[in-house]
Image (tube, rainbow, N blue to C red):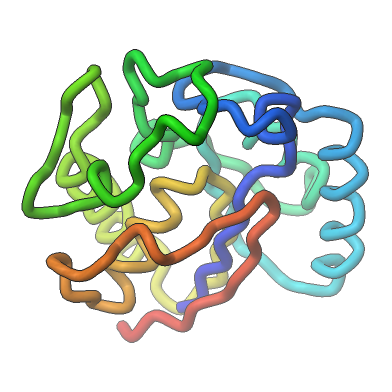
Length: 179
């Protein structure tokens, strides 16, 4: 099985370096242009299905990338992390080391605990592996769930520095999953 992860294209909040979390923001014009460039790179790539977060920025990215070539399936398990009181706050106030410390599992200021993200992403990946054996799946999501899913696939020691994996806008990476 092959899984290709894509983080949504740029929004105005990404450009302004503001935490979005569960805000349902659309792509900005630059983001749409970026997605069109990635679409060109992926045009000859075969996907059997596309799973996406149901948030506007991921749906819009997925539609630009694949149009109606394959069935698109929204799934709430790969929605962005709830950032609580840090939503719409400059990103510099988001402490990656603190909020990505698996053992600390911090939820202050209403931020979704990292272990909760891993739990929903593990559930999602197990579902995908069972349902789509031998297929090629596109997953369009957000930085937090993609980071968690990659750590799950790579079987990373969860006491390590999980925040170090950078997932920029339109991050695109393919993984071969052993069945």
